[in-house]
Amino acid sequence: MTKENAKLRRQALILSYLPDPVVVISAEGVITFCSMQAERVLKHDVSGLIGANIEDIIVPSSREAIRRLIRDLVIAEQRAL
Image (tube, rainbow, N blue to C red; front, side, top):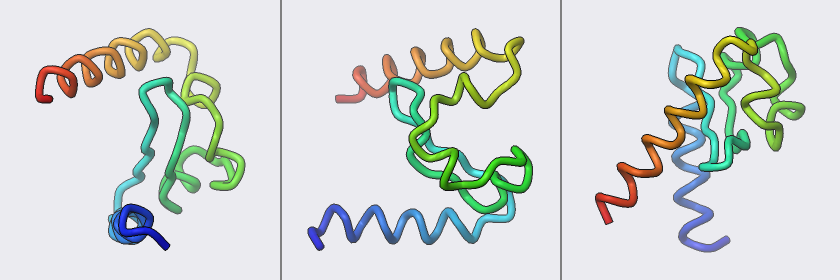
């Protein structure tokens, strides 16, 4: 296991213990991590959520807000570099 993989596993473990639902998505909106609490709230199996697009999971009226949020986060990250 590489150092980066070990770091990601530790982060996932920490996130999995949080009491609130946690969903991690890529800049393209693809779900890369879901906590068990997110499974309970979204009523989807975690294994089915990983790799899905967040827009396919959320209600249609929230999709534009998610697109804006992703765009703004990507811009902020690029500015920080």
